[in-house]
Length: 213
Image (tube, rainbow, N blue to C red; front, side, top):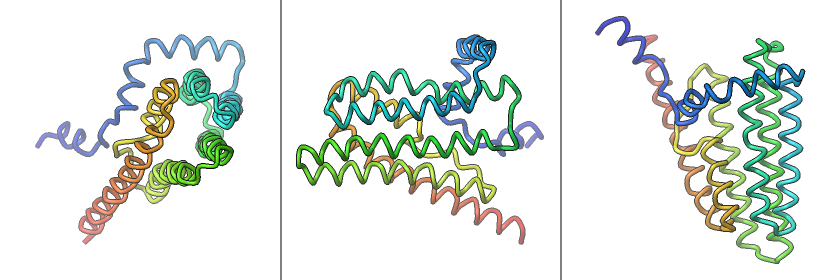
């Protein structure tokens, strides 16, 4: 095996999100350049995106499902722009920007699913409250397993339903006014994704131990 092949094998697999970022870079970069010229900060975009999720949650809570989907369609790209803007401006802030982004992403998801829970509470459907609660837990566990793995030095960009895929599902199914079907899919595949990540880290940990033996 050549050095190049070994290096390629050692690299983590590209997720769909990684590939998408590479595909849209020619379009994304000019927009980010304009944002940088306006003096916008990555942290500012992160905060605006989180506030936008509050609007989406309110729309869900009041039963305006389709409008909530369209609001997410507008808000979701900010999650791409803040990281791209930080790279454009060469800002790392000692890691604070990445920490703020991840923390606010989790807060935004909690608020968003809170909108589902409030709406189903209003209509008095306990089963759907539990469904929304389970979907929120699954989404958070997908993010937590990756964060915990990376904190231990493992790459963990694996699994069927990362953050990008979850938002694609939310946007499509909310616009189609199919929130229950969306929640069912999220429950199934978020826990499956968390399980995939647990198995992935277990295997990597075994390899680490074997390599150090």
